[in-house]
Image 1 (cartoon, helix red, strand yellow):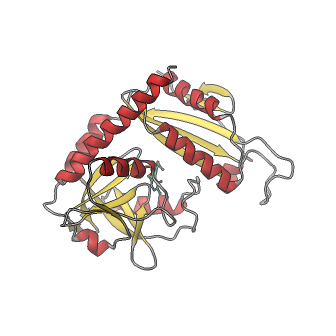
Image 2 (cartoon, rainbow, N blue to C red):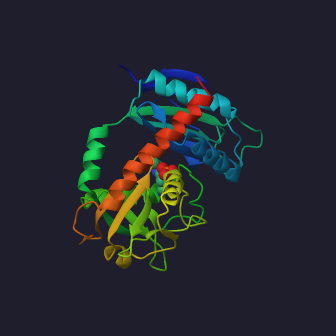
Length: 295
Ligand code: PDD
């Protein structure tokens, strides 16, 4: 079956899906994006992803390309047309097409909207979670507005490549003071030997991950102890457990941090239980939303 993409008002075969050479996303990385996980045909945390999209757009003074309800319908349509059961839907909004010049276009242009979707292999991802992954350490040399989910991801790309070349899954970025900010495309967590979950506060310095936010709901519902504070690579290496979160990774246990084995070198019990609990929570929420909002 051929893949279908949505590009500025049209559903087109993926191989014919193109944007203009003077799209400001292409020339200046002047745009934002979201990635939503589809699990068993259900879009996870959709409302939170769209809230964050609206915030990112506001911060960059880009208008919503279409009304939120229309965007929801487009996301569903792309998922349906690509028959995604397990996978992701990707949406990107850029400031639009204009003759190349750094300031915003004098005459307002329509923001450009692209939506694509792809399936992924759930069994392979669960197998990876059962084995655990390695993370390396890399310098966080990004700009200061990483709270905005922009497509300007070059430092993240370079850090991820470094991880891949080192045989690892992720790079944990470290700030000037020696604290871990987040992964190149995930949020970073540890569990101390006293059983306290720790992740960096999301006020600035990291992206406020949707998975992170939803996991905090789960942690609170289970009355588990957690702290939002920075931690170092050394503290992570001495932790009982570690893991990363993102829409695509859910809770993914980490078993090696910068060359040092964590705990027993296999996924911890808490991270494994949280992975299961998170999936149950998001499916429950999505199904409850669906029940009130049938499509
Ligand atoms: N990455 N931090 C960074 C830098 C990210 O790029 C992401 C998401 C996260 C986790 O956010 P969320 O839980 O909302 O997915 C944290 C996406 C998945 C990506 O770029 O593909």
